[in-house]
Length: 154
Image 1 (cartoon, rainbow, N blue to C red):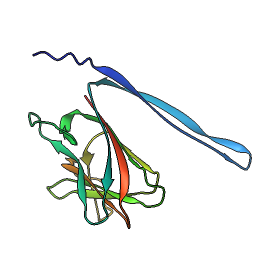
Image 2: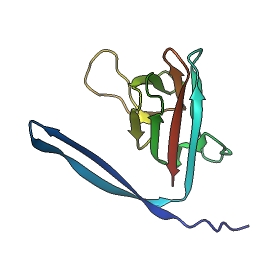
Image 3: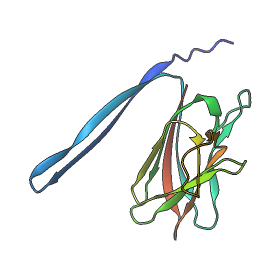
Image 4: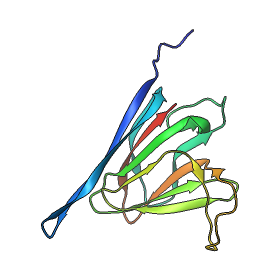
């Protein structure tokens, strides 16, 4: 069976606009990612009871599924906290030891373009190669929150 999915470019446009003391600031930065052929978008509830996996990155040839994507094909990931009060912790995890966390405030958005990470707790200059995250996990702060993820794959 041959696929009938046609690759397409995806345009992302980031913009900010603010007026401070009567002066307008901001910019719009559109860019295009070529050859997108798979999209996954999902809203899910993240609990405060325990960290839970949101996205898993798998090796080439491993079957993909909901929330499970081939590492090399990741082109764009957006995670939005849909809660209007509580933050959620987003953690990128390399099971070989590298992790990093961000605090995603209420209504906040986190965007990445790959699952390549590097963490350094000593403050030393960057000296080691990137590693690939195996998971993106999340845990809500004090109450359950809903998040939305959007993943575009080559």
